[in-house]
Image (spheres, rainbow, N blue to C red):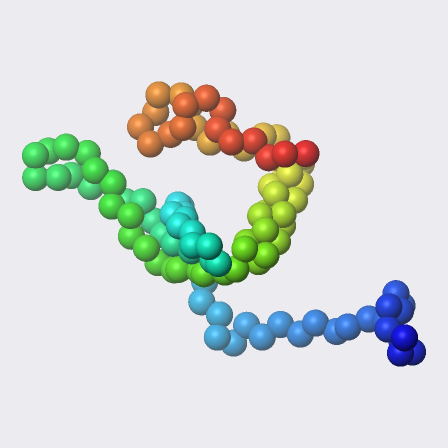
Length: 113
């Protein structure tokens, strides 16, 4: 084994380049998958009226992120940790009340411990 490999005291410096970063807000996400990738469309649900005076929602896609399954799993773990920390400090995030339009019935999904 080469000297220095698996050395827990070895540190790697991480530099972050934000010069080409775009910041957007999304209030919803649509996901689709292939055998190799997860596709996530981030955007805004915007209420609108149809010609028949009925309520409708327009999903305006602002960003699409495509990642492999390993990256998606790392994202899911990271988001789970962040949400759990937030809820530990601030209480459970409510996703909506049963029966509200566009809201899931019951308490919504739960993060596993």
